[in-house]
Image 1 (cartoon, rainbow, N blue to C red):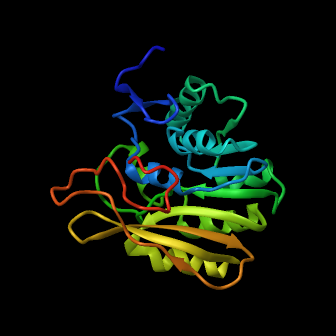
Image 2: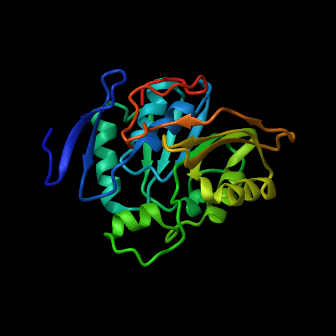
Length: 244
């Protein structure tokens, strides 16, 4: 494989999977790996990812669940190119299909209420004046996709009983939960991550289309030690794979 300027090849530490990242673009962090480990599916499921980025979440989800098909939406051209490279690198072209389009155009590819699972690690922040390159800004801020737009698309995509998995900023957790409830997505399970200093950072949740009320709150997941270093082993029973 030929690596372009800024690219590096990394080991995903699962089933000999590899990933190419580009430091000049958006690179994934532990939240993507945690989400991939949290997602549960059936072999017969059709899944959709909103915002595939480099493809890391869908690659791990497919490897851990061996589901029928994943359709990964990615709107940014530079990330699309990288995602295609990673799907091919891991020989998953028959299992993961990249859709180079905005998720808001999903009706061009799917009938409403036809998907079993939707998952996303979406932009966490509203638009800011923070200076960064366009790729990172779109990945981190609600420039192309707001939380409300995402949840509306999820609700329209999922069949009754279908599941939605998402991670999001803990500061906006009430907003995300409210959006789910208002769009017929019952939050059934959730947990928070903390950084080793007692600060809650992210929320991870599972919601069911048309589900009954009642949510199970799982123990917090500590992702860092007191010095801020990522923990290699995540001590929690609700992730499929304990490696961080």
